[in-house]
Length: 146
Image 1: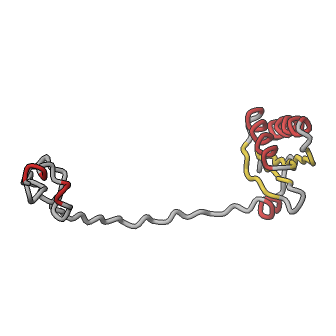
Image 2 (image 1 turned 120 degrees about the horizontal axis):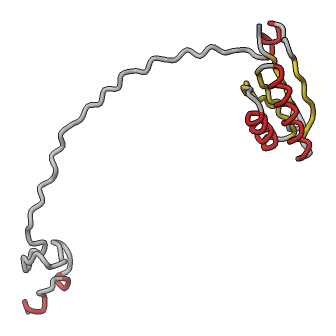
Image 3 (image 1 turned 45 degrees about the vertical axis):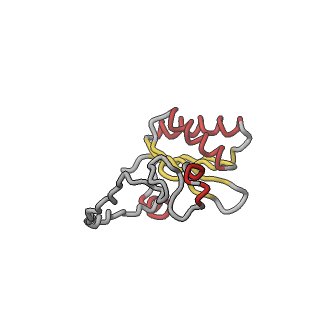
């Protein structure tokens, strides 16, 4: 035998999230689904649990929704027939896909050798900021060469 189901319609997504949070905190229910209604921005929150828990959750949800002026309707179905679950609660079977094996090939890349050579081909001083191809005036020893 199935547990009771409850449905509450709320205006707006933010209000629906607040109502669903309140219902989950008040009673031992399971939030099954949220569904966007066609038009007016209504959201349907579907819950499941024993009859007393669903009634308590929907009452608390209704009071929260009335406080924010977003309540539309609610309904508790104590002993739903099997047809209700096949039509309104279609359970999709999710078959986990096998993850492909990930093969990572790494190449040993030799790091370029850095030598401490003079960068300036005029003075050959490693502290000189001039590099080959720059104007001669950039050499720190340019005045000394004259």
